[in-house]
Image (cartoon, rainbow, N blue to C red):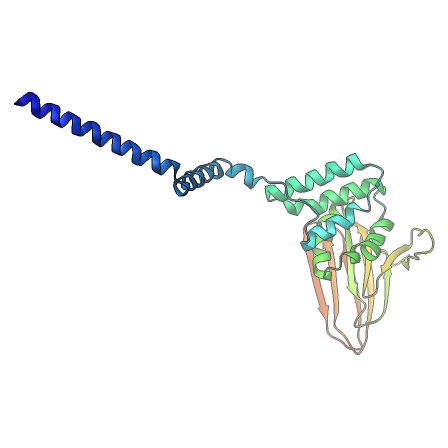
Length: 255
């Protein structure tokens, strides 16, 4: 009796195992189950590759505002040296990925300054003839220039709006020499330090240099002035009016 019951139970167990195996085989061969398995494997792969996704190379050709400025600046470099340009692009991409993009303007300033012998004349040209081609706001351009000028031979830039100003005069520290507006048609001399665009005046200077500026206000418009250095941007504004101001621009400190 005991042997018969055991034999019957054993047979039932064999049948149950066989049926369970068929169910599992059916589920695995089912397209829906296969899709779930593939999705599971894909999710696991994404988790394992998460670090790789985070370090994905970001192209400097993206249409974000600062990166348009990067591109027009790269175009100012010697285009016969493509290996050098590729290396700089790679450095830019690395900074973007590492979250240190604030170092890119200084990098570009140094690279372009090296090619241009860190001449203030080219820095002025860059501010009036190159940077506006980005189509970006003056505030974004100046934010970029903050780092760019420092990389460009540790220089600074004085900028002020033409709006609200009737006349202006700029001198060296002792007022012994009056600076002149640089001409686009001829090479500038040492006093051709003023660069004028449609709406703004740019005066590049070396860190430590002191300038004297005389402004005569007009009856309309608000005057904005920026002193740009590596430590930041010092901004001043004056309302419209018939006024005269004598301003000392110290190139050895921001404020």
